[in-house]
Length: 532
Image (cartoon, rainbow, N blue to C red; front, side, top):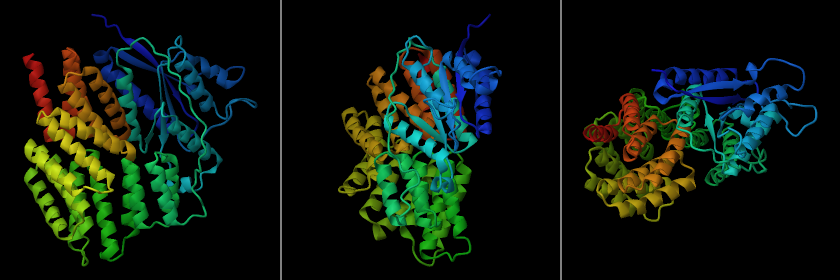
């Protein structure tokens, strides 16, 4: 029987210097069309400048008609801004003209344009320290989007992370089309110092980077971190790596941690050197876990623990951090008993040597372990203990994690009012920190809560926000959670075929990136669908 398929037009825009990235985008579209067209009844066709035949006149005038008929725009930037499309004109590059033309179409109810995705390739610290005029323009444009708050951009640091973002966006753009709602997006002018204050010392630059990050000015934070790490000092590199990880650039974060280890090669394993090695190894293990590489994560974290154990001088804080994360990776593999051993050892060390914040971290870890065993009352007790221990703490990340854990325990215990109270705290703290992983978790938990309350429209809003955040972090576990939530949403909306398709996709992802608790959720949803 013939199928009716919706063909959606996608314009691929970028300046030069991104040949591999443009081809990868085309590959992702081809893979989507081959694997999902029949299932979704949607296919995508790419328009791009290289597909336009030559002719007389301004080249951009030959390209623009293709843009004008498109439903979506995918715009890539690397280090190069591009060249002006005319000797005299409003725009300093053809890509800039395409972007603002697409914005005009987005605001026009009679044009098909529905969405624009802008992606920035992460550039090296060396280039950020001395960006040159072209990269300065790219950074300025990124800062303008950052300030707009109405058109979000995303970043990628490898072809693999680019593929994940584009594939996720294609699935979103393949959703059934509602009547177009015109959107007016304002892109404000901003002042940005792209290379940091060259007269500042390292500590001043680090302080500036922290302040910019806390204010959500990520372009300037990244530039300041790049300047602060010019001498390769381990402490600054570790802090920069943490910033990159929290903003979703996992591959770049891994490289910075690996740089710490390389820089310390040949140094004796004692004191600050041992502490830096342990931190960098543990951070790499965390990143590998986020990428679903559980075997590699286990090896990195085991090495981090062993490095701490053999240090002639105690490195208690770093040792406990490595134990914590070794435990979390073991939880993901289903080895709850060995996970408990790591958490218990870290807890005993902290009781003897740790600060109140560090003792609070141990309580959070033990709470998560009980969540993984579906021992929700015990988990609640640990999270409440953590918040008592953290009373007065200035570590917002720890507080956000404790509130989110307690909220999940309350959701599982059917105590919805208390769950909502704690979720609002977690959401506010993660928003203040611009912590994308934390925000995606909080929105996912809010969606779970709203689904339980049959507040379907609100659940859908939180799911949409969680999906967007997960795509920016590239977290496969987060993707599995959002697929399951979308399946639950479809089930609540009496769309069993959609629910089953989403659930099957969630099972595929979860098989590759195991999570015992999520597997239980998926199994319950599958059973509910079969028994409906």
